Length: 396
Image (cartoon, rainbow, N blue to C red; front, side, top):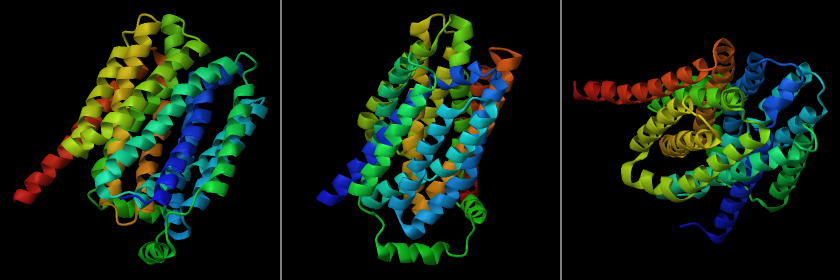
């Protein structure tokens, strides 16, 4: 049972994640066109997304492990400050190389947010409520995605750079809210125990250590799903612009509808599904919906179908992430370390996906989505194969 103080902190974290994703959502429909206005190719756009994810892959496990030592609140503030810095640099950029500087700075610092936020939720919830907590966390982020893209499309009418400065203002407000109102969830006693458990591990060794646990099943699956997800994220606007003439405003509406789907699914249904079916079955259902949605996007013939098929895809992602976070949190000895490693594998997928998707898009407009479908199918196969192999090993 949550105390009144825990409930307050619980919802403050949700509010912080909402503001974070509102800022991210504002720039999602604008970023591809902003980069293209500087003369970049689809492959260069993919590289911009890749370098950001590479920084997160390296630093998410480090920040997650560090939050086990110093607490969650300082790392949340650090990560959201990273968003503010990167958004300001985006708005000031006048050349592609400056965008790369902004992506690297943002990737390093913002990597602290997700593993720390998930660990915070893990600190203040019981195992029975963990799935619902992770689902509500996803819903708060989805709510930001409902409002952000449409707002970004409108703000882009002022200038392509204005949405980035607006998003930076939201990030600064977010940091101040956390500093003033949010209490620390990791008590000094728990912090001392975490230091004993992970004192001698580097960021890399903590990742390698997690690979020797049963959680590796979730890490591999999430990596492949993240490749597919980021291939779609990096190429959706440009693919639909070529296929049906979709512009920045229409892309903003598409992502808004996708956000509504995520809010409903994660805020209402995912916790119940996890409690009834378990994390693994929920993940398989999500991966299947994801693959179907990606395949359908190839056959979009107008704005309505492009939005509907994107929503099907987002249904899958809306199940996968909270179910995976819940499973890893429950199976972890040190939540910050394990959730940081999970976020690292998620980021590794986003290292590979955007550049690979951009490369395939430059070859042929359909290749990126064919490749994404294959990745989603491989995620299902690898996830199920792990269970079968270990079931046979246990029976021997």
